[in-house]
Image (cartoon, rainbow, N blue to C red; front, side):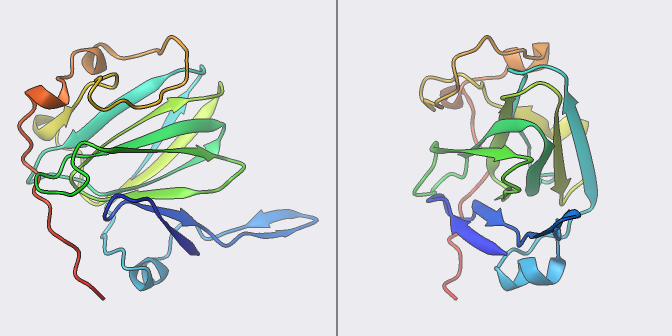
Length: 189
C-alpha cells in the first residue's frame, strides 16, 4: 500500500497494491496491520454499502457529532465519484478547507477520513456503488452535516443538477455551525 498525503492533517489517500493477471485482479481492501504501519489507528466496527442509480447523486456533507464521531475508510467498487472531505476541527491549520479526489472502480483508491471531517460525494456515473467502513456505529441523534454548496467552502463540484435528499438541502452553512471537534496535532513519529 502506498500512502499519499492530502495536505489536510490526518486525511490520507491510500493506493492499495494491485495484483493483475489474465484472470483479473486481487487486492487487500483493508489490513489492520498494514494500516497501523501507515499510522492509521481505527477500530472499524461497521461496513456500509451505498448504491446510486443515477449520475449526479450528491450525498453529504455528513458527519456524526461526538461522542459518536466516526472515522471512515471509503472507496468505490463500481462507477466513479467526486469524493469530498472538509476539515471541521477547531484550531486546525486547515479548518474549513476541503479536499476533493475522484474515487473509482478503475483507480482502486481509498480515502481515510479521520473524526472531525464532514464527508460527501457526487456520483459521476450511473450505477455507482460506494463502500465504507466506520469506527463507530450510526447514531441518529448525533447525525449532522453542513451544506454541500456552502460558498465559503468553494468545493469545485462538477456542473450538473444534483439529486439531493431533503435532509441534505436543509443542512446549515459552516458559518452557522458551532463545531464540537477540536484539532489535536499528530504526534511526530
